Length: 339
Image: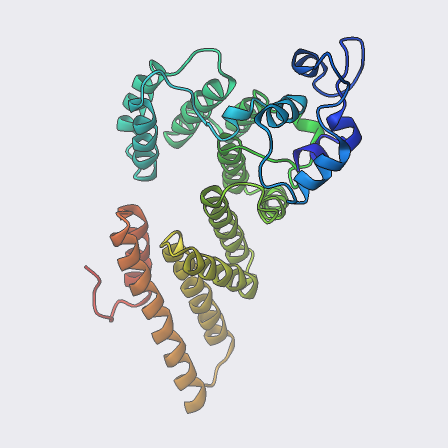
């Protein structure tokens, strides 16, 4: 996928250039080159590797191919490079604090993490810039437009030619994908709906190529589906929202995780209740059959919200549970209260 994203043919990828030649990652390739030949491997071998016909690739060949495409092979998935293992634990804790809107605590731990990061590593710098920018934005210390500019600048730490790539085709790492979702959320808050939808649809196409490992795939897929579901809800395209929600729920069942199920249940209930209320406001007369159908549909919506509430609580997502509770009690004040 990266070879195609770089616009390289299989012949170009296996070719070793000297320092005078032109082409992607020339310097890296010259450094990795062999004296006894002008190819990393044969095109036939590369074709078998890409088609899955080679189960084990020689480490020397793997490293040369990765470096030919501008990658350090041992750090393809490493989002941070730390001097101590507790740095990775701090990163997880910062993520939890930000989800719980505990911004002061997140800021303190981010400062500690900064002292444990290896300086000069682009992904470390990228991560710090993104986290600091998100904290400032959440605390309303930064305007949306400035926030967007910082995020695009952070992406260029690892994708210098960002303006030239197709988001749907480029293989991202975890830091880059997180930043892209920050960008989507910023466009959402700015009410730039067309830009928000454009990026979401490209990210959906990107994730569906499944070039990442299983853990990354399911997390990123859930993020995209949730974003599309919420977009469709706001746009009044309830049926489309429900489709994305059902895909997300099935994906969680398939992966045997709770994931974002409670978010999808919330969106389905919100959409269906919204349609009920619009129908009631547009129709003056209701027969018994119509009233029975509405009653049944509302019972279903309540059930979804109750399930979503307890799933959120089981995952420790207090913010998500409170969001469901507020909607439930606003729409169904006569129903049995949630805890």
